Length: 262
Image (cartoon, rainbow, N blue to C red; front, top):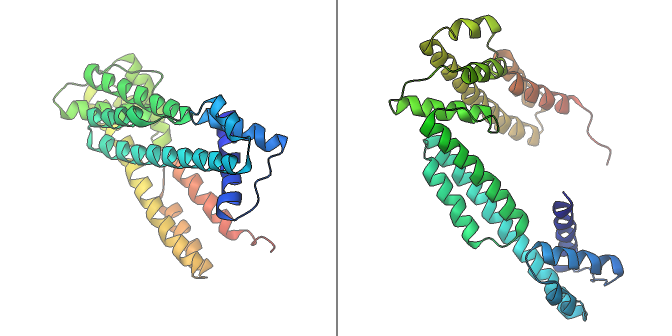
């Protein structure tokens, strides 16, 4: 968290100095920030210390730090979007390669760490796909999606106790009752059906919420607050997944709140 805070702070400093034209004041606090963040974007301490000997070189240092943050952030964001697309298609090998390609060029440690965590998760999901065994350290719904993909590849669903426990935990998140779940868990076919229900409900809920958010935002920005509210009311009229009900309720409360004083 300290690294992320430093990068946020130096980014604000770079906007003030490089974009808004504010003077760079080389006080002790600023020097310390530039020294820390230079190392956090994979620059040597000696290079940073040398740069801080003059205002022009310190400004160049700030510019280089900003550039590395911007490029690293853009790369990781683009990679995450591509990974999500490939995961939805069931291409875990392709998703892993996207992150390997990122790690081959990324130098900023905080972005490398984030990428490595993502690669480890993808590797774990690939193992679930290959073996059908649940991994307690991985995202539960993502594992269900992988198991559904495994079934599509022709592998039978092995109704282990780990899978039963996983379905018992995830079924309530999709508004499936305990009695429905226990009945489904009496057979592999029932477990497969409830797995599909969990995944389809989340897909439908996400699509419905995002579409409604788009319409709500457009209506709100055009001044039609009542129309914007109705978008979230329409979601709540049909939504059963608790997570998306909470999200819709939060948006509705935000629209009902008085605007902040100027």
